[in-house]
Length: 406
Image (cartoon, rainbow, N blue to C red; front, top):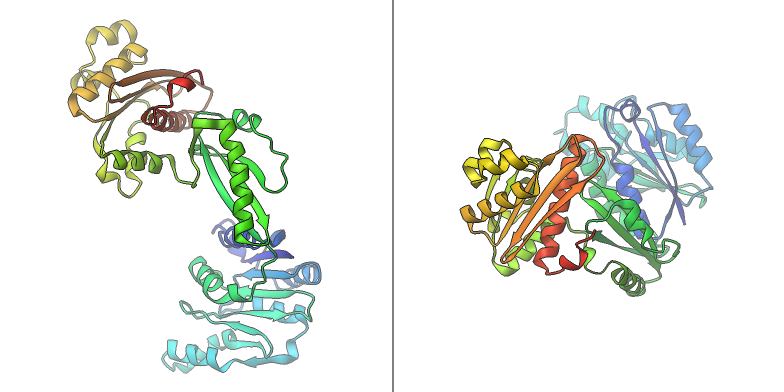
């Protein structure tokens, strides 16, 4: 089965609002095995939207439209859909929708007269009640060529209607299950070059975001159980390739994985950061449950604070500078002496030069790594934060030594 998505609103075309509805619908359709033909954004223009809808009818099974269901003159989606389906002479007032409007506006006749268009539908349409707004949605059958699904534009209303009112009318072509696997330390090209990407079912795709690299495996089958079997088989292949570099198989953020490890072992983490300026600690604190594991955090940006807080010696700073392995080791020792945390993480470096030292101490294990990379200043800081997370998890798992050359 095929689908097309229309987002309606001049505000989207002007860039005043972001179309998150289409992304949400596309993701949900993929889970039902429905192939998305294309996504189109159209302004509040009757003729343009009508032309696009007529072009889509008969080519796809489902046409999803979000936005343009309100009471004002520029809310045109339903009227255009009715015209495109050829059902102008079948429009009636849905009494249940009218009652809800009457209750909402407390029988205010003027308000009801303006909003009554929201209660008008072709008499054979399936009404999708809006429990958290005034504009109901509907499904219009275009003589078995296509079904037009109209939903409100506000994302909260659209998602609620999709999940609670629409889903029972959507026919599942198949089941698609996906799994996200977080990979440590590797850049995008390195990660992608290690795995065969030519598989068609399941498919495997490499991605890279602000947290680093990850692989998404997607399997399509006639049932949940069969899709999960396909996923498990492909995941075994990935594990054989990446081994301990596979940080998580549940789509969790790296920080969540780290927090889970610390909680499981009833241990604490402390941080002292220079180049990352608190990003390591902040990313941990972003996750619910961080208060159970984080002990102390310091931003030791200047040489003076490295001396004052971490006892880095003046001689080391003068001879080797703050961006050196020698300084990193003293930062790590100073942080442990101050906090006695089971896990200590430090960073120092030059963001603008793409130079960083990351130090991790876990119990009796202590490592300092130097990294050099080409990146903008803030990208370099994010990159350093991500590597600090990777190293911490691998060291806690006792798996870092064998991957020391990465």
